[in-house]
Image 1 (cartoon, rainbow, N blue to C red):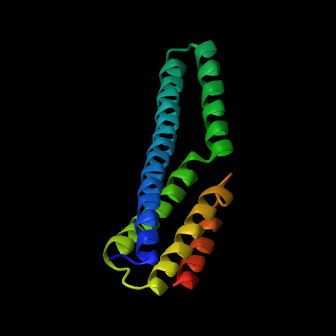
Image 2: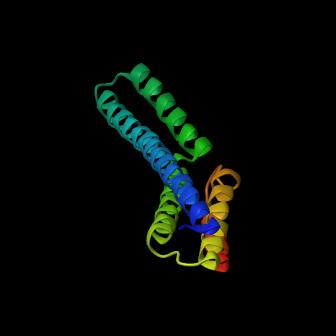
Length: 148
C-alpha cells in the first residue's frame, strides 16, 4: 500500500525524468551551436591568412566581416555560458532523480526533493545566462544546499 507522499514521489520522479531529458537536449543544442560558431570562426581565420597571402583583399575583407559577425553572435547569445549552465543544471537534476529513485524514504525527504526540483525549474527559466558570466550557478549551489 502506497501512501500519499509515495504517489506524489512517483509523479515527481516522472516530472524530473522529463526535466532531465529537456535539459539534456538544451545542453546538447547550445553546445553544438557554440562549437559551430567556433569552428566557423577558425575556418574563416584560416581563410583570411590564405587569401591574404594570395593577395585577394576582397575575400579577406568579406571573411573579416564574417568573423566579426560570428564573434558578435557568440557574445550576444552566450552559447558557451548557456551550455555550461545547462550542464550544471543537468548534473543537479540527475542527482535529484537518483535521490528520488533510491534515497527517499520519508515524507520529509520527499519534501526536500520537491523543494530542490522547484529551485532547479526556477533557475532554468530565471537565471539563464544572457551574456558573460556564470553568477547564476553560485546562487543555485547555495539554494540547493539550503534546501537540504
